[in-house]
Image (cartoon, rainbow, N blue to C red):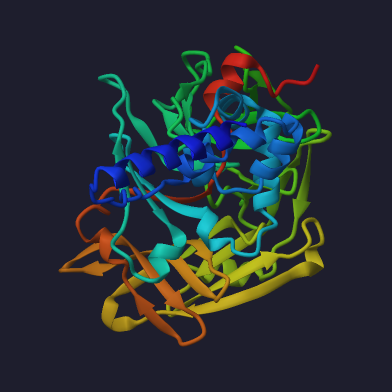
Length: 415
């Protein structure tokens, strides 16, 4: 009825113009954004059940969903505040065919400066990057390493607490309650952010590597306290932590590298187990740099030697026979590469994003490099030429999960 009336009025207006012999001018149609196109079609969708709308929307990307929040109040509430919707969108995105577009590189400095860039842009050597600056209160400083889980980034602040932030949705950052120690305790804390599916909660694990008992504590997001867990296993004489940074979260476990094996904390029963390494102790001792990580959803091991670096992955977590050498990266001597510090990401077409420690313009510094393992070529991303100094790289996945909403609404806590 409404559309018929509009057509009738338009026809009447056209007839009047023709009678006056005035020229008709075609109105130029404006370019329609995704939001405006949706708004033009929003009336029929209002008759759809919200659960059906959610089922459709959760298959879109985070960028598209961020644009659609202003369509109507119910959509904004669904996209911004519904944790179940955010988790489903994240789960569906992990099964999509193109993973490079949903992973982003993130750089941070001690002043909380962020640089965001899609991984796919780096592999085509694009100069596009988004820089966002956030500054903490005077006297606060951010630690070096970054832990990430489900799109949330976790930083150490002043060795006693952590900051959480989701750059995909530009959420408010959250500072968790400080971890208290006796005054005489020597501390060197590393923090690991994780999702514990057994209790449907996000947690932060704190590991004090310098304490006598190597204390481990846990904080559940949405609570106001830390809880002591079973202490780290006592190491034999001659055994030591090879990598003092945060533990590596993978397959419902947190993992630390020791001189001869991996110590793995099982989240379900909060117990420890030892996992063997794929190389001999001799190879470990002759490597310049050894570190754990995650690649393609698997626990990974990087051994950086004098002339090349080997990258291993454990295809089936807990199965020590599933260790597989993924690739060997040669060094180019003319570039003065001292070691490969970290393998950040391996693309679907076997391009490798790495952080290296190499000689540049007469001095050694950390740099990013892309290695094409098929053609055995290297390239340096152009965007880092002016901004990479004193920055720590990390790769995160896009998500809608907001640490601010979790902490303030206790929405991820079990009943």
